[in-house]
Amino acid sequence: MQPSRDQKIWMYEHMVLSRRFEEAIEKIYLEGKSPAFNMADGPIPGEMHLSNGQEPCAVGVCVHLMPEDVVTATHRPHHQAIAKGVDLKKMAAEIFGKATGLSGGRGGHMHIFDPDVNFACSGIIAQGMGPAVGAALSRKLQGKPGVAVSYIGEGAANQGAFHESLNLAATWQLPIVFVIEDNAWGISVAKENSTAVPRNDVRAAAYGMPGHFVENNDPIAIFGVAGQAIARARGGDGPSLIEIDTYRLAGHFMGDAEGYRPEGEKDALFEKDPIPRLRKQMIEAGDFSDADAARIEQDAQHKVDEAIAFARESAEPAPEDALSKIFV
Ligand SMILES: Cc1ncc(C[n+]2csc(CCOP(=O)(O)OP(=O)(O)O)c2C)c(N)n1
Image (cartoon, rainbow, N blue to C red):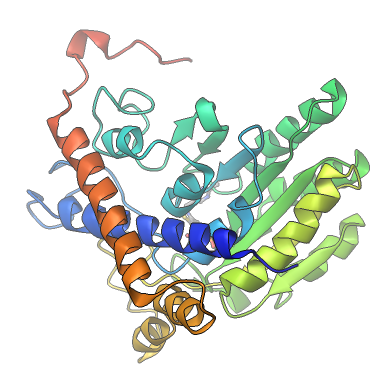
């Protein structure tokens, strides 16, 4: 399955939008933090996990999704949220902890929740898998259209929730696709030190579902494999698992000294940055011109500037409102 020109342009637009958004967040995160990385200070409080480099995993899958489809994402959620169509202004405001944010500023960057586009994420790793299975089950039982996509990192694939979710999804033949973004590191722990098998796609066989592996962080290859898995789910043929070989260009979180990386790893990763790679590939294929690509990049920057301005100008939640929208 190959993407159309329009689909490739959509993927490029959303990869660039995600990258520009995170570049802005990365700069602002450091504002007013004293000492540096004091999580309580500055316009963006709390931890910050950037997904720079992992954008292909978001666009190659979400380009196939409809508004009624559900995505549950991880603690590193910006690329997935942007590809699922979460409102950028409300997401920025949520990250800034503002009253205009998606959850009134109560969730922050690890808890982006947007019922308008059926998107949720969590700071608890593998937490989204059970709710994604539930969303898929509800669609099946109610005879409604829609599939669920559950994103996790390769470290989270060792959680009990992973195995329980795959088992139920296969037992009930649910319309769901599990997507593992293998960025090689779970914080500072290399995959080979946490996981008994080199590739998680083989684990799918234990649950009687197809397992796929996509090499080289390639959005076009991800498009093909994800298209097949999502079509299978939509057609009532049950779940699939996809593991994607990807990489994060940043640390695990803002402030990570990254001493665990072998020397030269970072430089090598930047050399295969998927955004310039796709740009070059699309120009060579005649999908767009250099000027078209530049326009897309300017447009993304403009959207990001607007979203950041909205977040900065929005009011803080009122103190008397602190306990509203909180469920215990
Ligand atoms: C249940 C649970 N245990 C531990 C943590 C702490 N923690 C946060 S991120 C992380 C590593 C996650 O690695 P991976 O799933 O590979 O995702 P990545 O950070 O690489 O995107 C851990 C252990 C957590 N958030 N939730």
